[in-house]
Structure formats: C-alpha cells, structure tokens
Length: 598
Image (tube, rainbow, N blue to C red):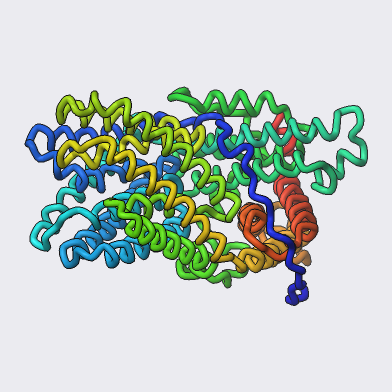
C-alpha cells in the first residue's frame, strides 16, 4: 500500500447552520439517573452546611458533589475507577485555583490561570473520553474558586470539604449497582439491538423484499444504498462496538453477562445479514432489557456458542491476539497532538473573554470565561450551534431567575431547595437540547453566588447577560481564528488504520479455509490456521477503526476553512470494511445466521 497522501485543494468556508440548533431531541433513556444523583450528591452536603450555619462553604462542597454527574454509562467496575479519577482531577483543579487565589488578587493573573485550566480540562476530558458533561463542570468550579476570597491557611480545609463531598458523590454514583449490577451493560446492549433494528429497517426501505436480487446482495455487502442506509449502518456499528466495550470492560463473565453477549452477537448478525433478520424481535429483546427483568436468553445454537467462545479466547489472549503479539500498546500521550488546536482555542477564547469582561467593568469575569469554555466542541459548526444554544438558554434562564429570586430570598433553606430543584431540572432537560438545560443551569449558577449573602437581582442579571454575550461572541471569534488544519490529517490516519485492519482481517479469513484450523477438520499435511481468537481480535480492531473513521470524518466535515476531504475514499473504505466485518461473522459460524431466527 502506498503511504503517499493525496493533496487536496482548499475549499471555501462552510456555511454555519442556524435552523435545527434549538430543535428538541428525545430525552436520554437514563435522564433521571444523573438528575437524581446530583440532587442527592449536592443536597446532603448543602443541607448539612445549612444546619451548621456555614452555607458560605457550599462552593467547596459542590466541587466534589458535582462529580456525581459523570460516568453514568460505564459498567460499575469501570465507573468506580472513572469517578475516582474525576474526583482527583476536580481536587487538583480546585487546589490550583485556591492556591492562586490566595497568592494574588490580580484579576489579569486570575483570568490567565482560569484560561489555562479550561484548556487543560478540555484536553484531558477529550483525551480520556469521560463523556458528558465534559470539561464545563471542572471549568465552572475552578473559575469560581479563583475569584473566591482566600488565604493560604484556608486552602487545606476547603480541599478537605471538597474531598469529603467527592467521596459522597462516588458512593452516590456506585449505589445503583447494589440493585441492578449489570444495568449499564444492559442499556448498552439494548441500544445495540435497537440500532441494529434501525439498520434492518433502513435496509428494507432501500431494498424491498421482492426487489432485492443482486442489488440487495450488494447492499448487504455495503456496496449499494443511500445516505440514510449508510448512516443507519454506521450508527448500528458504533452501538454494537460500544456494547462490546461495555461488556469487555471487566474480566468477569457471570451468566447475565454471557446472556447479554449472545444478544450483542444477534445485533452483529443483523449487520451482516439484514435481509434475514426480524427487527421486531431485536426490539423485543431490547425492551425486555429494561428494569430488573431477567435477561432474554434466545436459543444460542451451536455456532452462536462458538462465536461467544471466541470472546473468551479474546479475553484470555489479550489485545495483541491476531497480530502476532507485536501490536504496540498506545500511550496516553499519542492522542494529545490532535487535541492541541482545540486546547489552544479554549485557552485563547477564555482568556480574551475574561479580559473583555474586565474591560467592560463586569465584576465576575469568570462567567464570560466559563461561557467561552462551554462553546468548544469537536468542530466549528458544532461550536457555533453550542453558542446559539448557550445564548438562548442563558437569556431565558435570567428571566427565570428574576421570577424565582423573591422565593429564594425567603431564607437560606429556600435558597438551597431552589438550587436543588434547578439541579434536577438541568440534568432532566439537557439531553433534550443544551439550551433547555441552560435555562435551569443559569438561575442555579446565579443562586450559588448568593450562598455567601443575598444580592440585588438586577445587578446579577445585568452581569450575567453581558458576560454571556461577551463569552459567546469572543469565544466563537477565537474558534474562527484558530483553525484546526490537523482534522484532515486525522482522516488520512484513520483511513490508513481502517485499510490495515481490513487487510489483516481479510488475510485471516482467507487463512481459515476448511481443514486449516486446529479443530476437528484439520489433518496431516494441512497447514494450521490462525485460530478463531486471531480472527475475532482482527474483527474487533476493524470495527473500532471503522467507528473512529466515521467520528473523525464527521468532526472534520464541520471544521473551518478545511481542505477538500477525501469523502469518496472514506465511503469506499467504509463499504469495504463493513463488507469484511460481515464476512468475519459468516466465517466464524456457518449457521449463526439461521440461529438468529431460531
């Protein structure tokens, strides 16, 4: 394969869409979990401080409490590790902020430190892929801590309070595992089944049963179909890949998890042979995974069991299986390069937003800094949409604050209860659209500033509106100024990875000819095949590479002043990759397709 990369002509700047930025989506299937978790995680420490008459310390307890918002999609073993890292990261950020605040009162220095922290939060959360709510919570807490009056002697006590609240948040996040220990894996499997059913429906819409013939076979192989068919297949492949990641996150394989593996196999079979799959059955299995009902256990069949046995071999063999044991484990620093433009955007935008706010005489420049930090997404188009959502949500939110302020000012208890209500509302609504969640986040942030004493609402509202507009405008200008020219290079790298993974899988498929393996079909004089573990490892790598290619292409497609992207090469690589994935499913089990309907 040639390593030379084609040059692409620069294309005109892309239009930034407005329609659709405020459109409401379906709520997340677990919207109530982070909503309830944050109420419990924030409520207990705040009510305790209220009883002690020290509500002025609530900022530090919330630093730990808001960690409960993270890692709700992870299996509990992985969630425990992730939440611990989130709490430690929050404590490190707050420690830097508090020490800086105790050493200087210069707003210029404080804004600079806040901007650097925001850039670090963006880089680390993107690198670790911790998921929602991303870096904004870290930046919100650390920026507020920078502008909180502080002495060096108070820092240990404030950090201890944050650590105690963080430990409580960890317990809150892990508590549901006592009732539903495999809940995250069940949800991931249900999403894979539903996405596979959606792909089967999209396939049937393009290739009706009576008109398939050779064209339908080409569709199964990924060689034909429209954009809707392609998007449905990519979404289903990503959901199946996420389900396997969830199931393989821990080494233990209790019976409920083995039953979930069988269901994910059925989703993979649907991707390989959509014409022979009943989408209603996939959706029924997905529906049965809700709640605490027993996991559906379809009749496995001989070859499906063999395919599941491959998963056991993969766990035993480790990530180097199928590549001669020579694959290099990626270092965490390998992903930093592509994130540098986004980190630079964040640092520059946050710093400029804070300084413009200071120049306008606003007393809380960190609000502008946080607004700018909240904008930055994977590309400029998404950043623009987030800016529109942020402005609309904040402007509606200050109106809601004006209406609620008289109630919150009835006393400290009313203030705490109003904050808890807005905490719940923000997490309940934010999955519908970011602007809708911001309608609750804005009054909550304004009320938090009053934990140290009630303030005149008019001044708070004015500062918030000015900082919102400054942060959104300046932050977006910084995103335009710092172009991400590496986005196209990432596509080329992702294409190379897909092509190498596909060639490896195809080579193993060819090597696993009848009689070549170590099983009953082998005999004297026949070369030993690579074994099912090697093919399964290669299939996993190819699936992951295809998911990464689609995500990288989507991110680059919305970037500013980007060179022409190799869209045709991406399409051909995806078609060939999915065709090879389908071949691996068929090769691993000749009757697995029939077993799916058994």
